[in-house]
Length: 172
Image 1 (tube, rainbow, N blue to C red):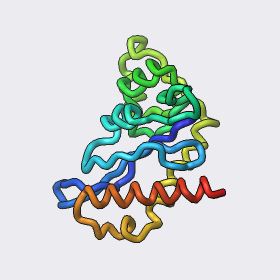
Image 2: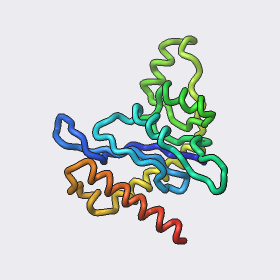
Image 3: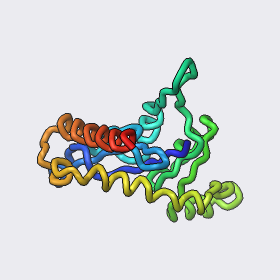
């Protein structure tokens, strides 16, 4: 199971410019939402452990639910030592590119900076699935136009759209 992690500017919070929004979600390899968290203005990297803690995929029979991904494909916003350590502890592959500023800091430390993190370029090409997933969620006019002023109703709309996406997939 490969997971795709991506932030998007949806779920309502307050910034210097007024109300703004953000949703964080995990999708499966085919772009269907697995975990959806609306966190107002919460940053991308601090939300990652919360997303992973909510991951629970039930299985048939008496087999325990799956809570560990094989790999996580994420953008540069999720590149941090803490997130990579969390994935190592879960024995999951981190397919997250290292931002240039982190590369520079590591190189400035010399040999004490360590080796660059492992990065699979071919797997990373599959990250566009999460972008397409956000586009599918945004197709709903209520979410695209941001008419909802309460974070609770906005998140409910995002969850309802996720249910529609899953129901279409399960009906096939």
